[in-house]
Amino acid sequence: MQRLALFDLDGTLIDRQSAFSEAIPCLCRTYGYGLEVERWLLAELSDRACTGDFTRLRAAFGLDEPAAELWQQYVDLMAAAVTCHPETLDGLAQLRAAAWAIGIVTNGASDIQRAKLTATGLARLVDGVAVSGDLEIRKPDRRLFELAAARCDAELTDDSWMIGDNPAGDIGGGHKAGLRTIWLRGQHWPDELAAPNHVVDDVTDAITILLADTE
Image 1 (cartoon, rainbow, N blue to C red):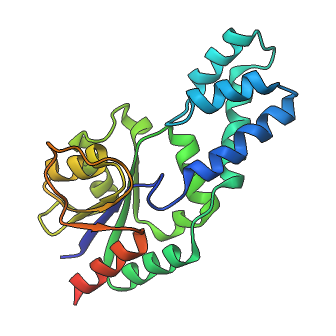
Image 2 (image 1 turned 180 degrees about the vertical axis):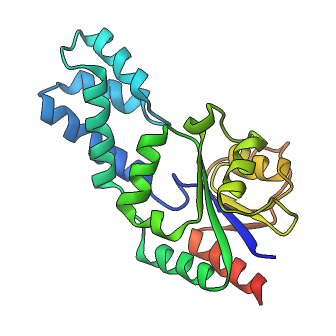
């Protein structure tokens, strides 16, 4: 049976924070918004963003631009700014060559997450993608992991893996879905959460573990 590896996107395969820190000032320059608007966006969109955030922005500052236009500009800027390290892309290609099915399980709006996947070249290396915006559910909900597996034409088994940086969403959700887990350290680890199978500093280290598990 083909092995399955599910990966988180933001903070695991890509650096959302760096792209975000570049995209927001650029958006504000494009529309001539001042520092107050920029600070609002940096604070309110720090963890996630959707069209509704720009509806709130318009209301807060009396802006004329439609929320849909501002959202699309933000999506385009994030896609232009986000990157995936070549070593990560190479590692995923090695996993596929070793007959692994690769899926993405990510919270976020569907259009912006898929734009990131396309812009970074990740889209061509994965077999299936499940975005929380597809079903209006979020990790750690087991259904999002099941959707990712189904889109990979695979099943969740005790030989499947979830790799991510978020303790509750990625690792806790992976545990609830019956998966083995690898955590990318960085966030605070909650004492009440069961430990992951492995802890690494970079996603390429996680890929190395998976490749070794293939042998």
